Every structure is written in structure tokens, then in C-alpha cells.
Amino acid sequence: MSAEADREAGGAEDASGPVTTLATPIALDFEFTPGVAQSRFLRGLARGKFLGQRCPTCGKVYVPSRGSCPTDGVPTTEDVELGNSGTVTTYCVVNVPFAGQSIEIPYICAQILLDGSNLSFMGLIQEIPTDQIRMGMRVEAVWVEPDELSPSLASVKYFRPNGEPDAEYETYKEYL
Amino acid sequence: MPESEVLHAQHHLEYPYSRSVGPVIGAFLTGLRDGRILGARGAGDAVIVPPTEYDPVTGEDTGELVEVGPGGVIETWAWVSRPLRKHPRQTPFAWALIRLDGADTAMLHVLDVPGPDDVSSGDRVVPRFRPAGERVGSLSDIEAFVPEADGAGPGGAR
Image 1: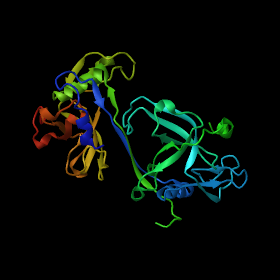
Image 2: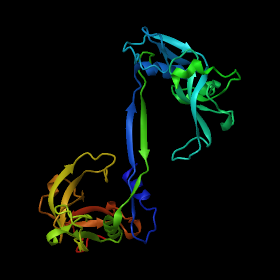
Image 3: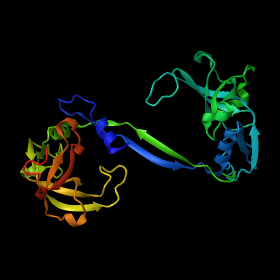
Image 4: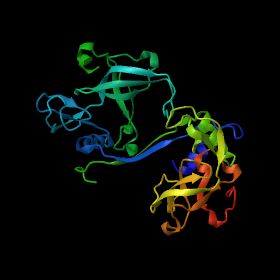
């Protein structure tokens, strides 16, 4: 925020009473690089695909991959393309508004374990009433239109129930 | 971009914080909005500007608020030849520690002079306040200090 905008933000209170508050916005501009492994994941998203990597030692598939296995400490070299479906391992229904919120509340934020992967990631669940979400629910990714795909998780609009029977707890209990 | 290259992206992170200023800084900022500069009387009758709630040496509560300046003396300064985006002005200026008349401490503010050859420690300066309607209760209600010799006159350019 510019110094001029700081001044404007400071003028919110009664212009004649005592000054009781001071606007102190902070801002940071930075360049982020996700590194080689996550760049591959992000480029996959731009093609409408989830790309992961498998650990050559333990065989676990990480999506997104950070380029190494946190358990074995070895580089993950084998690329794995995952499907579009997964399982809700755990979730949160967001009812509390906060500054900068971009989704209408209430909404469901869930950890999703893609089929064939060994790492869950956070996703938005839609097309279901918030009181019907449950652990083990089978979901599928809904992507943006092909011309809107980009190397960003914004390429995934949300996940929705895919109609399959719930997964057994035993199949995802390690991923909570 | 080749597939082998890593991605990168520009990010902008911002939080719209505001903070409550308390009775002393609040009075100081209210004074600035009114075109006056206030200090606080501390231990040994020293006048602290900008005012603090506690004496920095003894830790005792400071006493009455007193008006200082508007003129003062440059104690020391540093020339900013390439201002950054967050600086209060985008043309070269000096940061100056200015001890206002009646004050025993120096206050940091912007000095508006053409170049580093136009400023010396010991120079007398006066504040150039923004017009009354533009003042919001902020240190930037003083746009800058300028050399007293430039004719802002007693009372500064209010």
C-alpha cells in the first residue's frame, strides 16, 4: 500500500474527536518459486491432471511432491499421474466470516486423498449440503473450463461427491 | 517456458491492520491534525517529542503535554538519493533528526531540500503541514520540514 493510501486509511474516524486509532497496514511483495518438483505438479494442473511422484524406497506417492521423500530422505524420481477421484479423510465446515473471504459461507474444506496417492491435500467440497459431508466420502475434482486452466490450484474449481459408496475407514485411517 | 524450468510468480501479501494509540500518542496525533506538535514532560522536566507514556530513563509516568516548536534544529541527517516505494516521497530527500524548540529529544522526519549540499547539522527548520482539511491525525500530517530561511515564517507553513 502506498504512503498516500496509508493516509486515506487513517481518516476513517470522526474528523473532530480525539484521534484514537492509527491505520498501520503492512504489505509484502515477493516472488515465489515452487521449485522443480512442485513446478511439475502445477504444470500438470494447467493440463487438467494431478501429477505426483513415487518414493523409490517406500513406494509412497506424494501429490504434490516436494521432490524428495520426507521419510526416507531420497529424491522422488518416478512421476505418477493420478486419477480424478479421491476420498475425504477429514473436513471442516467453515461458518465464520473473515477478511478476504472469497467463498460464501458455510462451505466445506476437506482433506482429500486421491486414489493411488499417500498424501492428502486440502480442497473445497461443493454440490452437497454442508450437513451431509462425512469422512470417507468419495469425491471427484471439477475443473475449470479448458481455456481457464492455469498452473495453479485455482484450476480445480472444487470437489464434489462422485456417487460411489463411502470408503472403508481402514483405507484412509493413516491419512488423517 | 521449457518444461524443465521452475515456475515463479509475483505475490502481494497485505494486512489492513489498525492499532489503538492510547492517550498520549493519541493526543500527539490529535495535535498534528490541529497543526500543533506536542511533547510530554518527563523526569527532570525534560520534554520528550514525540511524547511517550513513560519516561524512557526512569519508567515513571510522563506528565503534562506541552506544545513545542514548530521550528527546530537538525541534529543529524541522512540523504536518501533513491527513495523506495514505501518512503513518504518519491523524490530524493533527507531523513533528519530534528530537535524542536522547547524539546529535549529529537524527532525523525522528512526534510525537503533540493540536495545534500543544502543541509547541515545545526540548520534551523520549520514544518510544512498539509492543509487543515487533509490532515487525518498522522505523522504524515507534516508533509516535510523545510529550511526556516525558505520563508515559511514563524509558525511554519500551516
